[in-house]
Length: 255
Image 1 (cartoon, one colour):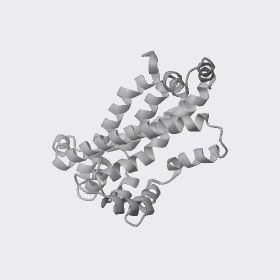
Image 2 (spheres, rainbow, N blue to C red):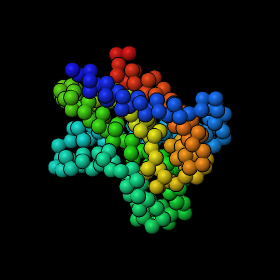
Image 3 (cartoon, helix red, strand yellow):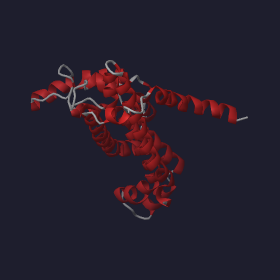
Image 4 (tube, one colour):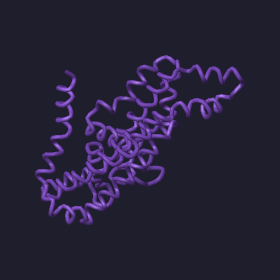
């Protein structure tokens, strides 16, 4: 009986992609994909998604450990705040970033006063927006892994005289490796497909902030065939990333 809802669920994922394939002009597909604007958008998407994924790892790993191991009051509320980008509409997240780091935002004014630069509508704004929406995926994966593994090994290492940093490096991080691989893949894929927060906070400036999802939206207004071709390219890139990285992420250290 499980096959019936499973097939329906699979159809909900596969059939829209099939619809794109039936709408696309396969004979024009190569010429549409090698346009300079398309290649620039693809390059910018891959670079910014990679940078935001690095930021997710550097910031999200310590945050996940704190959320999983800390016993301070209010940690449940803090966890809810961290996971907020998962349920917020991306446009709302973009507005929040704009009013924080924009020219009139309290942090944006400080940055402008100190450095004379502004964050919105720059490539850095794209990375910040992607990190904002992607980091919760990494935190959820890592925190769930830590809670599932428990803290028995860390306690044993501490009783044997290991310092906190040694415990984190030699015990906690190896426990996180399988979940870390999975979380990195999810974060990269989410950053690659980010649209709402990016267009609100960073705009759509060619060669600066116009990533591949924004290029699809731009082309949809002037050339539907080009938009469909770029959408298929984005799908292929996402599938390749997940297919190549996901198995190793699941195998973890066993591979």
